[in-house]
Amino acid sequence: MQQLRTDLELADREAIATYLQSEFPFLEDSGELSPHVGGRKAGLARLQDFQLEKYGKQRNFLDGEVSQLSPYVSRGCLELEELRQWALKQSRSKSVETFVSELAWRAFFHLVYDEEGDRILQDLEKPKVPMNQHQRSLPDDIANGTTGIPSMDTLIKMLKESGYLHNHARMYLASYIVHFRKVCWRAGADWMYSLLIDGDLASNHLSWQWVASTFSTKPYIFNRENLQRYGGSVLPGDPKKDDPFNYSYEELAERLFEGAYTPEPSGRSSGQYQ
Ligand SMILES: Cc1cc2nc3c(=O)[nH]c(=O)nc-3n(C[C@H](O)[C@H](O)[C@H](O)COP(=O)(O)OP(=O)(O)OC[C@H]3O[C@@H](n4cnc5c(N)ncnc54)[C@H](O)[C@@H]3O)c2cc1C
Image 1: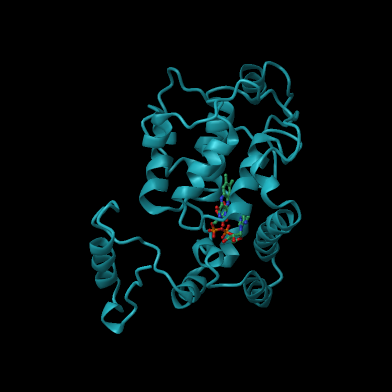
Image 2: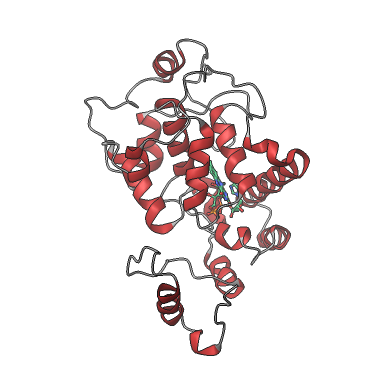
C-alpha cells in the first residue's frame, strides 16, 4: 500500500492540500481550505475562544454561541472528560450545566453503541408514527440541495461546503427528510454522516433515530414559527406559497401522520434540544 508523506516540508496547510490533490486527483477541489483547522492545538485554541457563559441561552439559535468542538472530539483531539473538567472550573452556572449535559448525550450514545453494536443501524424501537411508505434512497434534489425550499437548500449547501452544521440545523434537516419527505431515516443518516467533518456513527445514527421516533417517544417536527425564531438571521425566509412548514403543530401532525400522533398541548414539539 502506498504511504503518504508526513515530512516537515508539508507542515503548512496549503502544501498539504496541494500534495493531497496531486495524490488523489479524483477528489473535488473547491479551491478553499476547510475552515476547521485540525489537531489538538487548534482544538484547545477553539476552546479558549468559546464563550461558555453565553451557551445556555444561545445554543438553540443557529447564530448563537456553541463550541464547535465536535470535529476535535470526534477525531480524538479532545477528550469529553477534559471538557467536562474545564467547564466545571469556569463556574457552576446554568450554562455549565447545559454544556455538561450535552457532553453527556454524546457519552450516552456511545454507551448505547457499545451495548447494541450494529443494531443502531436499524430501528431500535417501533416507530411511534407510520413509516411504512418511506423510500429507501435519498432523492437527488436533497443530495444536490435543489429542493426549492430556500431554508433547506441553505442548510444542505452549508453541510456540503463546510462539513459542519449546528445541532438545530441537523435536527431540521433530518426532520424534513424523514417526516416531510418520507425518506427512510437510514438513507438520510448515511448521507449526512458521509459529509460531516465530525461524523460519528453513534451520535449521528442515534440522533436520526431520535428524530424519526425509533429511539424516542415521539417524532421531532418543526414549523415555520420555530424556524424563524431559531434560524431567522441565518436562513432565508421560505415562500409562503407551498411552504410545507407554515402550519401549527396540530395541523402538521394531521398532515404528516394522519392523526396517528398528537403533539403536546404547548403546541411545541418538545425534546432534548428545545
Ligand atoms: C441528525 C443529527 C446528526 C448528528 N450527527 C453527529 C455526528 O455525526 N457527530 C457528532 O459529533 N455529533 C452529531 N450530532 C450531535 C450534535 O449536533 C453535534 O455534536 C453538535 O452540533 C456539534 O457542535 P458543537 O461542537 O458546537 O456542539 P456544542 O453544543 O458546543 O456541544 C459540545 C459537545 O457536546 C457534544 N454534543 C452536543 N450536542 C450533542 C448531541 N445532541 N448529541 C451528541 N453529542 C452532542 C459534542 O461532542 C459537542 O462537540 C448530531 C445531531 C443530530 C440532530
